[in-house]
Length: 136
Length: 128
Figure 1 (tube, one colour):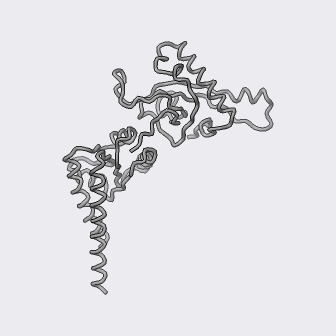
Figure 2: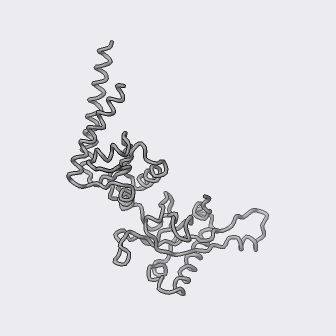
Figure 3: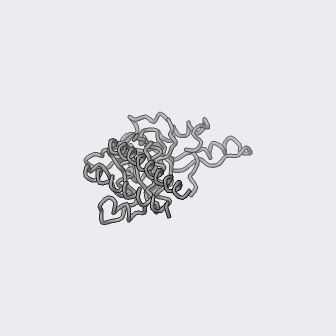
């Protein structure tokens, strides 16, 4: 009745090397394109989650353990599991788009952009579920 | 025994109503297609059989709650669902895409419920 695959939705990646990782939908293409004739979505997700922090850790240690490694990828909808969560991080659409996969340098730049945004949001302490590793 | 008879009767009636939808073609049978329809927001109602595997049932229910689509738990198993839709194969899950027919089915099922309940009551009073 309602479309729920929207930008900002948190999805779990089910296939590929990032399976089990949480990601945010950046752009959703429902009907498919000529080179991808199925419904797919561009997602930006977390590859390496920030590690657990305790009160006894010093500043330098905390900074090291709060690092996030991100990824950007285009997935078929059937390889994503939507959740009820959504995260409204302002991911820059001009930087994170489908044209990014042309070259590794562009892709790396996009991943850096996503990483910076994620780390900023992690430090504020919001959207805790998104930054926790999914245990399975 | 009465409950079993009642259930069988309502199943037949529900199955006969499916003939309407089959003729109009506004449905999708099978797990992959129903999940696609739910994801795209096109499914107006989803049916699950009673022997649908628990994980699959849970996944469809979760997606349907996200899409605010109604899930109907069919009282038969996948063989009965397939037969009811006039197919020679088994069907665990199906999605109905046409909204008008959903309301028709809902209205008719409410009629059936009231009919069977009156039958039961009359039986009860007879034995009194």
